Each structure stands twice: as structure tokens, then as C-alpha cells.
Length: 158
Image (tube, rainbow, N blue to C red; front, side, top):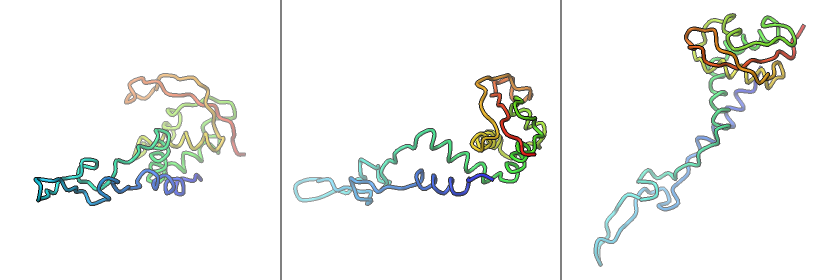
């Protein structure tokens, strides 16, 4: 349904790439002169003895894509059923505005609440929905009235 596996593999290699500290070449130690004829072994000041350079932080968008790919992979059954609801028209016909509350009313609670947002992102990328730019208060009691996005249904398979 969605390319979560290949996207997850691709992005994981970016995020989890360890790099050797350039100051100590991965040894974790440097030698400091104690006096004129002896050396003392001290932790590398650049990596603090961990042997790895401080990794470049991935962008927020990259971290979001990695997190959503992981969530979709772990909750693939729930996500597949939810995407089928978008395709089948059970959430509404073309032009209908919906929210995540509408989806959650038709589905059991997911194992991870993050999968709801990941499913909406997948549906948007598949062209099934589009953003309206509007927000409304959530009807769910555990959401405490926080604002949630409204979406417009674009495409329904017959």
C-alpha cells in the first residue's frame, strides 16, 4: 500500500550512520605529556572517549519521515485498514471534509496514536486527501479540545 519498508531502510541508514572520531581515529584516547619523559593516556576531548564523532543531526523533516515509516511498519494492519477506508468512500465522498476524529470513530484504538498522523500523511501522498488549511477542536475527550486539521477527500475508488 505504501512504501514504508524501503523508505524506512533508506532513512535509517542516514540517521544511524556512526562516524569515527577524527581526533582520535576511533581509539577514544589521546596521549598527553605528563612531564618531559612520560606520557599519560587521557580520554579524547573531541568524543569524550566514546570513539564516535558527534553525528550531524538529521533535519526535522527527515526525522519525521523516519518516525512515520517506523510507525507504519509496526502498525501495518491498522494502517492498511485505515487506508482502505479512505479508498472505499466510507469516510465520505469526494469533497467531504474529514478529521482524524472521523477515522478514529470507525477504527479501534491503534497500538500507537502516532499511526493516525502517519496514515493521513500516506493518504495525502497517495492523493486520496488534501489539506484544507483549517483546524477544528477535537471531539475526543482524551484530546482535551486541541485543534486538529481538516482534510478534503479527493479520490474515492468505485
